[in-house]
Image (cartoon, rainbow, N blue to C red; front, side, top):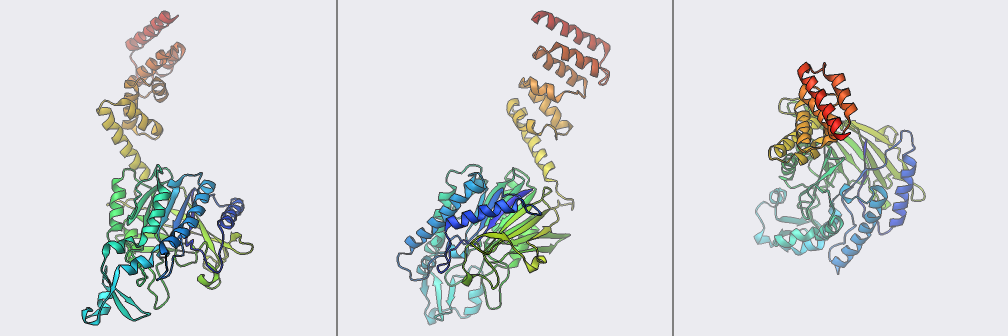
Length: 489
């Protein structure tokens, strides 16, 4: 299995703070327990942080940039300690997205101007609900504002992106990770899992609390993954906002965005924001039913005042099955002594875990896509281009790790490339046992290269009849072996 440590909502409660040492030690101690539980939980191979790294600062806060920097320093120190202890220091296995608490309200407010009554649009409610509207309504003062400085407004997440840049600076192995991107792309589990990290704070600010992913980000991420090279077994989406909320609240994301993900082959979604663990399937009905498992992590650091009734600090460990068609979500909850243990959730029938499965993506004919076969086909095509461009050594380097799975054409391509590159050890390995007369002759050549005359004769004795080698050719090869042996005696 492949296991993901899913944490979210790291913002620290002012009234009930928790230190990094307390958090790190509690997470490590819990790992020591859950790897031996029944059922045992796999230690994490990657980490997802689904937003809200800091608490943020209220409007009209003096020196807000300094205060935001101090909060990000705490979050950065926490992650800097977590990475070596949980993923051997490999930051390419950490996926981070922003949340609404990461939005700097003061910068957003500075980009707005109060709209006079005579300048207001004729239908204010309709204008406020328009997608990408520049208008905002302040319920506290019952005043209308408009975003008048788009460049300044776009900087409301600058503190997050500054942290983001520092965290991923010079990290190798990233698929496509850029400051300010609507969607960043990560590759996990040896290119078997693609993760798209969405920014669900499009249009979110001090007066607009909804979650929103930029309309074309989902479609663009699908196209980018398709063009990226490897065919992944599983597409995972990460964002921050929840998909539902209580009446008269707007701080959640339109479920249609998730349905757009499902229709484009995403099968696992990880988010936060609602401060409680949840795992449920989301379905769309296209030509056939398609399902995505949507998993929410509770808050790792929020205090009692910010948690739903009866819910404690939580995090998840998500185990993805070997066939990439199901996941088991284990919920861990903090109880006494700032320590984590199994949660007992009514939604999981009193257990601490639940398993969700999904249908694999299909091709245009409705057949399940075999990602392994697609990756192998692409590898053979790349190798063929290298061989035709007279680079047999590079052809060998990309085919040799797949030699056991190669179909007939790929196997022959590897044999030809290894022969041209004079990789005689590999030639001897692949052609034993030989399938054709040509392979038997190459096997003999490889044995002679190592002056292993006994093995060359043994190959002729064992396989000459199997590959229908003519007596004349057999005699010629035996004579050659004898002559080579005499020369090197």
